[in-house]
Amino acid sequence: MKVDSKDNPGLALDGALPVFRARDLSRIYWMGEVEVVALRRVDLDLYRGEFVVILGPSGGGKSTLLNILGGLDTPTAGEVIFYEQEGDHHLTGASESELTLFRREHVGFVFQFYNLIPSLTALENVALVTEICEHPMDAVEALEMVGLADRMDHFPAQLSGGEQQRVAIARAIVKRPDVLLCDEPTGALDYSTGKLVLEVLEQVNRELGATTVIITHNASIAAMADRVIRISSGEVVEITRNYHKVRPAELEW
Image (tube, rainbow, N blue to C red):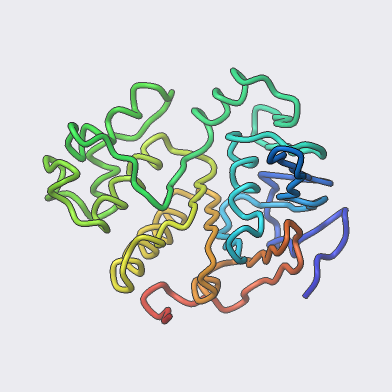
């Protein structure tokens, strides 16, 4: 099913409120004198509490889109608005300090590589974030939510890859983010561990209500999403809605 229109691009969930609205979004990079178009006039809405998979090949523009939504990058053209109860945030044209505040207050990030601080325990890695946000949950609670109650005092080198990724998820959710943005969160994991991480992300989405976005080139993961957004060559080519979602444990690839 193709993108509907510029007024409603994306098969809105019934009664859902928007959290992001992007219109005519483009991003161009320059490599010397060579122009590289990473995104090309993307129209997109994301909604509160939904679980979205952004699917596409490497180099298709997925990470660029995620970074713009998360305030880590800025578009060359177009508009991005983040909606919250206190008011709208126009990310396009925002200053670096405004983007920093937006990331700190509203966005949790999970990347393919865990980026944990080696000299800190799992609990200390998560607790570090609570010092820079307004209404965090308890770091112990965040680690319990991802199934690491018995590994809190271990250092990253003492944890498996899947456990480290779950610490990274706990670190992302401890601030109670409105949006959880995940860039290939299972890309460095084996099949069984990857499914375990997806189960944690599904649980976080369900229990915390954070809009959860996963970008991946693994088409099998799409079956667990509320909506699937396919990107190719910097363009949104298709948006579909799953009326019957598959649980992570049932996925196969």
